[in-house]
Structures are given as C-alpha cells and as structure tokens.
Image 1 (spheres, one colour):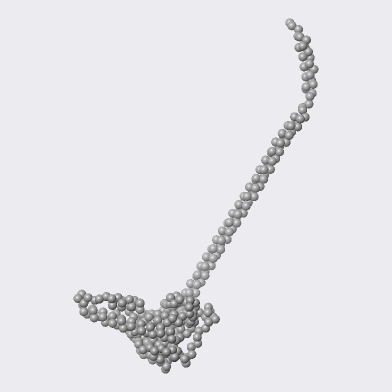
Image 2: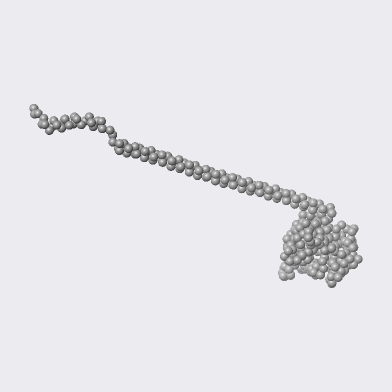
Length: 345
C-alpha cells in the first residue's frame, strides 16, 4: 500500500481547516438587499395593479350611472310627451264634442225658431260687398222658386236643359207631331220663365249698383195687396265693405244655404200650385232706377205670415263698425213690372 504524497496530505489538511469557516460566513448583504428590492417591486406592481383596477371600476360605475340617468331622462321625457299628447288629444276631443253639441243645439234652436216664428238668421263673420248682397238675393230667389215648386228643376239645370233643347233638332218623320207640339209648348213656357227671371236678376244688379237695398220682398200668388206667401230678405244688419278684406261670396253662399237647409224654412208638405212671383225692393227714392216702378203708398201686408231670411254681420267680431241707418222717409219700395210665372213639364 502506497503512502500518500506530502502534497496530497497538505491539501486535505487545508480543506479540514477551511470547512468550519465557510459554515460561519454570513449571507452577502448586497444580495439580500437585491432580493428585498425584487420583493418590493413585485409588491409595488401588485399595488399599482389594484389601484388601476379600482380606478377602472369607479369609471365604469360612473359611466354606468350616467347611462342609467340618461335612460331615465329619456323615459321621463317620452312619458311626459306622451302624457301631453294624450292630454292635448283628450282636450281636442272634448272641445270637438262641445262644438258638436253647441252646433246641434244651435241647429235645433234655429229650426224651432224658423218653424214657430218664421225667422232664420244668417250671421256672417265679416264684411260683405254690395255685389255680394245682390248675389245673395238672386240665389235666394232661385232657391225659393225651386223649393216652392214654381220651377221643375233648379235654375242651372233649367238653363242647361233649355240650351240642350235649342241645340238639338227634332226629326218630325221619326217623332209624331203631337209629341213635337207638346215639347214645343214646354220649351216655350220654359223659355218665357227663364227670360222673365233673367230680366229680374239683371235689373236687380242694376238697382244694387245705384242704391243700398236693405230689404227685398218676394210676393207669391194673389196680388201685392193680399199675396198667398211672403218671403222677406232682410239685409239691414249687414256691414258693407270693399276689397280683399270682405268675405268671399262663395263661402257666404255655402253658409247661407246650410242655414236654410237646417232651418227647413222653405219646405212645405203641401203640393205647391203654380202662381206668379212679384219682386219688390226697398231703395233710395232718388237712386235713378228706370226699370222698377216706385210704389210710394205700398205697405207690407200684415194679414199674411212672412218668412224672414235675415242676413247680418257678427258685431262681436266687428264692433268698431256699424250698419248704415236707413231713413224710412228717404227709401221707397220699387216693384218689378214683370212677374215670374212658374211652369211644370
């Protein structure tokens, strides 16, 4: 067995001597500090992360609250708008219902007064022209003649029928002579009635251009002293004007005939017999009209019940204007020299 060399023994002795010292050597302070810094850095990142998460949560909650508030405001706004719309719609329905009720009530009162008193009031919401007054009288005259069965059809239909008959030629070889003679007789009667009526309407236009006409009388049948029927068109309460400020004649005529239809003034269940119709108009004595004949001593018959159509302007709307006061001494009655004779087919 070989003995260890002196160098080997020396190395072993040095290891034995150094080993206890290595066990007592403390951990390096620098390395320990580095470990603590790493730990603190890790803790810091955790804290920063927690702060960022908390900030994000707060922002999310704030945004969510804003969205909820906005939605609530929208809901409140929509609810309020719907409530207002429903309220307005309900108010409109109530107002419309009240208007219909008042209209029906006024129509019933109008019909009652027309039946019991023989008066129909037509109130226009504005001023009218003198030309418009003439149109009112002319259209009422045509309507009364038709409603009282003095004309077989309306004036416009009669004019159209007459024109059509004049344009057509009757073939005597096809139609028997008796039918031709009957058609000719009806055509002549129609033509005479239309000529009389058109002449009266034309002369009324002339009279309205020369003077204010507060009243017009239509006397049917009998004589002017004792007629069978009397219709008075009263224009005294109308406020006259001119230009574009006046009401349109067409709208006034619609209102006029609606009122006459509701009042049912001109209808009569009794069959009307043919009778002449005489027109009298109250005008200024010095108006210079030539066709009408003045009747200085004429007085409206009182033994016959009149049917009065009173046209007037709403003074509540036009309170600053007043109607012209008619001096009874300056106005006289003028009679149309030609009576309108009714006819039937």
